[in-house]
Length: 241
Image (tube, rainbow, N blue to C red):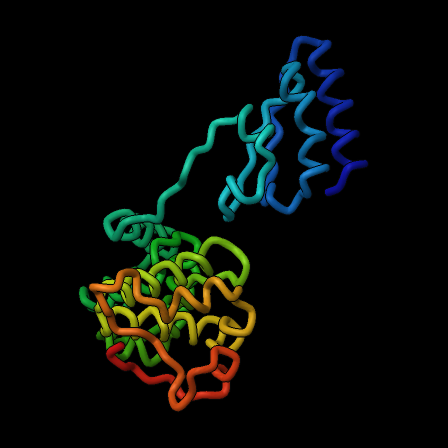
């Protein structure tokens, strides 16, 4: 919905307020409204015409107006734990009227695939329930039939910078195993070439710079090249600075 639809909602809310009734306005994916559109909520929030409830998968500090945030309370919904995912699985089985054909280990593996997302878990449960298997599947059989949920990544949002931050910290901490893991995550999510080309000069320098003169950590350097611009065409190698 856009500005015209919102104006109609606000007018209807004013009429209800005049009749002694309140209006709770729920806006899903509120970050999709631009900053000017978000300003349209402010006067109606301030005079009590609406009680605004907005949902977003993005960081509110990045995507919402400071004025809007100052008039709201931010509640963070954390990812579900394995125990909570188990309860959700049991509820789904009650709806289906039968148990999933999984061993205990496979059941836990299924819940781990959901990565704390209840909606993703229900989608996985539907797929497993449709198999109608006569035998219980172990984790290997489950993994062969189901694809693991893709790791979180957004090329311009918070997760992009979370990955880069994790890579920086593992490089500066001289932990090659962790650094290789986070580098692989970056590469798998958005191709390291695209990340490198799109990165600022400051980020390029940070990825290869030592934080102190005394401490020389493992550094990620383009093989057979000392030029940052040549990095996308080079093979990555690990070298002690």
